[in-house]
Each structure stands twice: as structure tokens, then as C-alpha cells.
Length: 288
Image (cartoon, rainbow, N blue to C red; front, side, top):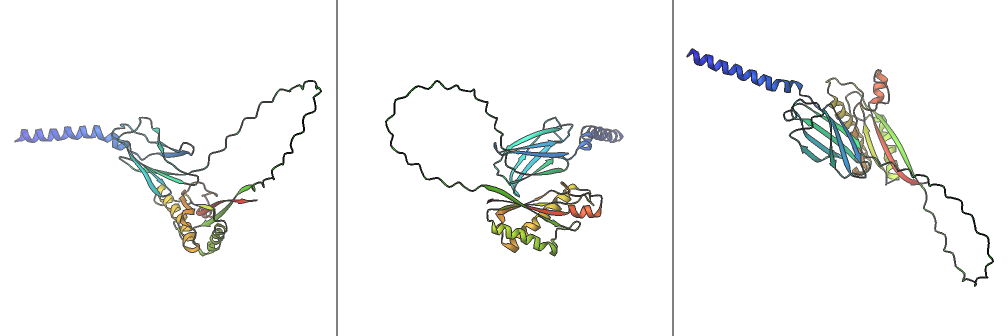
């Protein structure tokens, strides 16, 4: 009886030691993706997702999901059973998009946590043309007396075509500020939002990107809280334009950037108040 008890205890101890040696280092090393960087080539319609995620055993601890949203709608969710051994690697996806579209990519570890990143698609920069090489001077031959040519029939010149008016891009920036951890629009900003709505009604070809921001205060030490709060603020202004002024929802996009891109120092109360804001960037093309 004692031998059986000793044997059972010995086997359990060996199993525990093997389990600890095999799994403990991996789980203690488990971590969410450190960063996710996005780039988009509008010419090739290619979205590149560069991930920084360290692992000891790629088969056991790896990036499992890459979820892609475009303008708030999930268009792709890729599942992986391993990852490259390098801590920084890139996945590419063929995703059609146009200028102004918004990508939000969430990368999830199979053991611990996830990280998100947002990108607004912009138009490619024009390629500068190379200056033409100077031409060699051509020496005209000596004049030769020509015989008088037979008179040609008169050619009637076509009527001049009116040139198209030149175009220019106009932008308006709206600033709406919020209280800490709030996404409620204060009454004193209603008239400011109305000015934007009137402009969009006057120019029906305009589109707007509502950008939400927060300060760097995070009571729960969770960076995603400020991203969600800034998205809620941007959504509030977008919905206010739709509900109160009848602006078509397809003309307005809302994006939350959290504490990124501050316009003032977060070390002062006044600076943090300025950073808790929403900007509406409106673009239109009108004749000069």
C-alpha cells in the first residue's frame, strides 16, 4: 500500500516538474503585441501590417488573429497558427480603398492581449517630372530663292474653347472640447457645429473626417480606454451633424486617436483640457 502511494506521489511530482519546465517559461514570457504600424499603397491597393511581438516558441506563443475594419465594418479576419521567429514582421493584404477611407487593424496574441492601430487613406504624392535635356542648337541653312507657291485656300480658324475654371481645395477645422472621461457635447459648441453643417449643405460635394482625441490621463492604466473614449467623442459629433442637420451619414467618417497628436502639454490642467477635443476636417473643391 505504501509503495503504491509513494509511486503515485513520485509520478505526480515528475509530471509537475515537466509541466513547469515546459510551459512556465512560455507563459511567463507571454505578452500582447508591442506595436502595430500600418501603411497603405493606394496604387497597388495593398495594406501592410507591421507587428512587433516577441516570442520564444512561435508554435505555442504567436499572433493568432489579424482583424481588419474599413470605415467601422469588419472586412477581413485572418487566423494564424504560428508567426515568424523575428520579433518584428509584416503581413500584407490586398484591400481596395479610396482616399478618406479609414482602416482599423486589431492584432491578437493567442495567449495574452491585443493591440490596435488606425490609418486614414491619403492620395499618393505626384511624381516629379525630370527636366528635359537641353537641345543642341540647330544652324539654319543658307536661304535658297524659292519659286512662288500657288495660293492656298483660306483656312477658317475654329472658335476658341472656353477654358475650365481652376479648382482649389478648401479646408475648415472645428474644435470641440470635452470634460474628463466624457463624450457629451456641451451647448456652447452647438453653434460651432452648426457652422460646419451649413458649410456642408452649401457645398454638397464636401466630405468630413471627425477626429477624436483625449489627454494622457488613464485611471485604469489601459491604453484602449482612451482610444474608445476618443472614438465615442468623434461619434457624438458625427451623429449630431446627422440627427440635427440632416447631413448624409455617408459623407462623414469618425476616427478616434486617443492621446496621440496632442496640441498642448498634458502636464497642465489647461493643456489637458485643450487635448480633450474633436476636430472636423472638411475638404471641398470649388471654383476660384
